[in-house]
Image 1 (cartoon, rainbow, N blue to C red):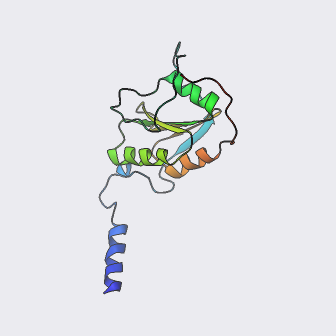
Image 2 (cartoon, rainbow, N blue to C red; image 1 turned 90 degrees about the vertical axis):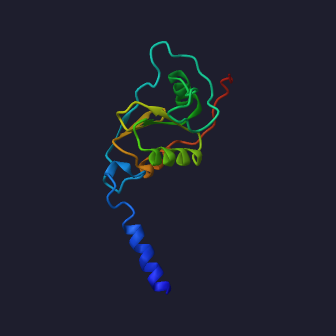
Image 3 (tube, rainbow, N blue to C red; image 1 turned 30 degrees about the vertical axis):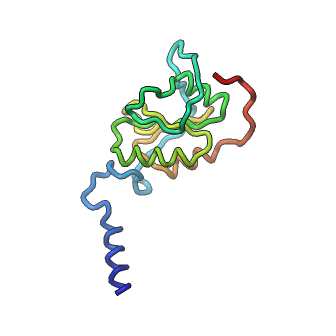
Length: 156
């Protein structure tokens, strides 16, 4: 009986993604997502200098209070944070995965971003852009930060 149950469960696990489009899974199989790393570009627009510390680690596409580019720049430069911008066009299960992942990270804020790239993860000096969601690569980037203290810079 246990052997039958184990075989049935294994078949369900193997077939969990059967018939699903490749981009509908929250975390793509290894090698399916392409990411490129390079120097970061600014997240703030011209004149976007106002900032506030966000009150949570995840912002949904419909949230009215998504941090501004100035706030995101402040987090990168002054707070050693990781900012993850995700495409609003991601399937809801992928957005849920990002929400859950961000909640488990230190000094990480995930916000909706443009459709392209699908994922843009930014540290003070590095940017990772991906054509899909790969939580392993996001975790690797998050762990690459040099721990340290944040200088006192005032709070809003």
